[in-house]
Length: 155
Image (cartoon, rainbow, N blue to C red; front, side, top):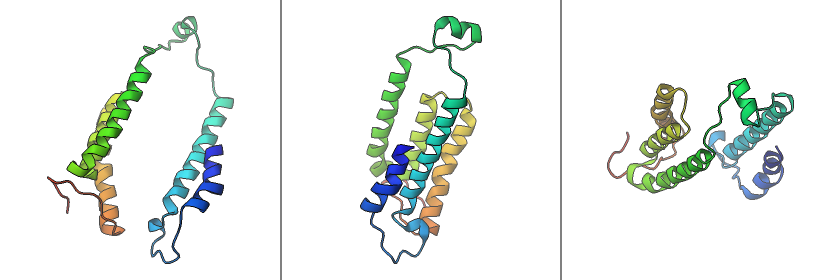
């Protein structure tokens, strides 16, 4: 929550310059950083409230077996973090070659597999639909060009 407040009060107003003649609010350089800062603030509040009023997770093996919660391999979270870092670097490398839309689809699917999503079909649908809808909005409605690849270009 403190990070979101710092962004709203100090970082965004001081370091994001906004011209006065922006025709659409969504094209303002300050609009999306404000949205992200508010989301950070809200999610921080939700996490704080859930920590205060939520139940405590089992801390020992005996507690976990009595409650039915299974612990995963302790090295798996670090491997998953490394895998996500590799996907992020691959995304940056792939954008000039494949374009932002196709690269985002592949990265979304890879991260869904890494986190072992309980709904893989939904993740696949979102991985395909979300980049296409965002491309359509930014390219055709907002008039902002989205990086295209060398091999496949979208209309």
